[in-house]
Length: 471
Image (cartoon, one colour):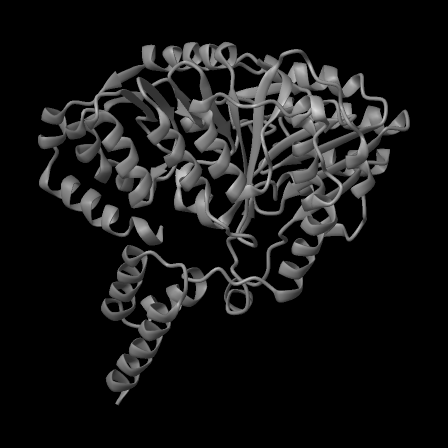
């Protein structure tokens, strides 16, 4: 009787999987296999992690905020410049996904890899005169984290409006720290995004593991900072055995900062109900000629495509050379195919991944893709100087994409992310030079090595790669 009941429920849940819209066939098949082959646990896992369930009121609030802000944000005429033909398909794909167009007249600076990058951020905060908006997935109470917290408190004390968002899971320890309380006491407005709920009960009504993974700082609507770097030291105290964590941080001026501001305000207004839309009426001057840039912000509440689509479009548009850096490679089939196809059609394709990952499951799953990449002609390099956490794509020495998103389904479907696409030979050269420093600290992976892996390692990797659609 119990067996019959279980398989009846399993069948009903499998039918639910088949009827869900916008699911790739591979995802449907993976979930059906888990539901049917893993008694009870498979069904429970599907209800906890198989669907992106959000509270209706939450989704409606976010939609209303987006609608309100989209009516306010308009680029100035001088910031609208015809993009080069090679970038047009990418800009169109990005706009279809996120709603932002490309704007010209921006200045960018790639900051140092080491902890001195945080000093550039602190200096800009100390010069702020009107407002500072900060959003980090992870903020640690270490030397770098305290520098930024102290700068925020100093700014609030002199009358600057400081608004801070941290992710409730990624920065859960920081929310209990003296630095967090010190910022609040100084007058900073501090909130936690996506607060945690009871694991099982809450998971039945909304997805528990949705996270705000963005890294955004906007100062006086004039200067922005973004990249892969969280607010922490490279030593990364919560996972020191993988240190140093190697990241990038970009300093930006120009009209693109208003798009970063719009993304921050979408989050702030959705979480607090406070209407700050008028902030977007500020229009920043452009640098002539400056660089073309475009924000690509995605999240589970508004899925008109994904960052995977944008990345794949950029890879397909490349004609000579691609260099890709990511810490987590658990792609969907279209992105993995785009990279392998680029190598097969004669492009010089280099991928740089960390040799040792902070997630054994992700590392094993990534290894399940190595044979296909290397056999297609991709130069696969494994970084050995710590945990390479940068997320960069450069193409043909003239365009780049960087930001918070990894090449995995969590970033594509579950996290709130913000990447930036840039058309700039100068910045792309700087990013390529930075990636060359990664290559000098990496070792190549050859087919002979992969073929020599033990039977257990190959079985584990390929089994997890089959499960990649639901990881």
